[in-house]
Image (cartoon, rainbow, N blue to C red; front, side, top):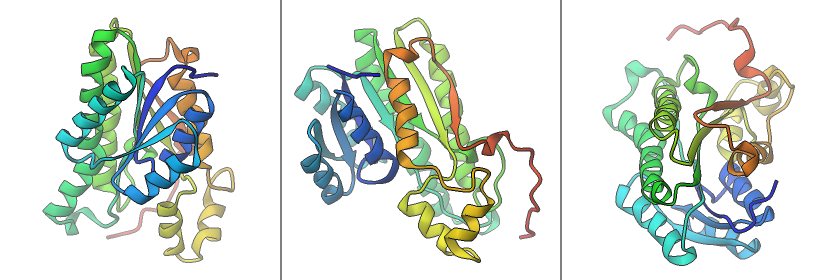
Amino acid sequence: MRLDGRIAIVTGAGSGIGAAIARRFAAAGAQVLAADVRSEAVGALAAEVDGIAAHVCDVTRAVEVDALVVASVERFGKLDVIVNNVGQSIAGWLKDASDEEWQQVLALTLSSTFFGVRAALRVMLPQRSGSIINISSGAGFGGSPGLASYGAAKAGVNNLTRSVAVENARSGVRINAIAPGAIETPAILAWARSLPGGVPAYEATLLPGRFGRPDEIAAAALFLASDEASFVNGAVIPVDGAASARMAAIEVPKP
């Protein structure tokens, strides 16, 4: 699968899944505008990989996301692909969550995706082509103790994806989402280290017996960005080692 001549934006590209997607797209021939609020991280990525340019952006601010898309059009003349990858969870029981924590999770996880989708549509619909890829989560499929706000936000990402696909089904613009499982990113590893038994104990509970790798999510993103996925629209695709297929049989701890 190739993306020769394509122009792509990847948000949250400073590390983890976003960085892996930016690398994979560039390797497939795309020109990538890698966006992140962390200027040093995204700058280092751009300096390391040919075909990647850095752009500092706070995706919780609509004006900055709009400017990111405008920068792509001004620099490259168009936008073919956008990956909305930013999200954040704050673990804890919902009864203890503050208003500020709730708003922070929604801003980083759902509103940032909305801003990216809306800005991309304003460019892609007139050109009658484009692929929008949202990074969701298995938490958006069902309840997860301690992740109520994050799960609610990711469920919103899933429905936003499907709704926009239906609204624009004949436009030439496709929108899909990837729902990763437990992926070996700095944030997940830090969380797993805080659990009893640390990373090895948590990893042993996963169906494949290991974490997924960021490049495995990037492979799915490359497919959705490519012409090979020309009839894939409105899909929310789990890439989770069968986690979402498993019958729920875990003991839910009492708050």
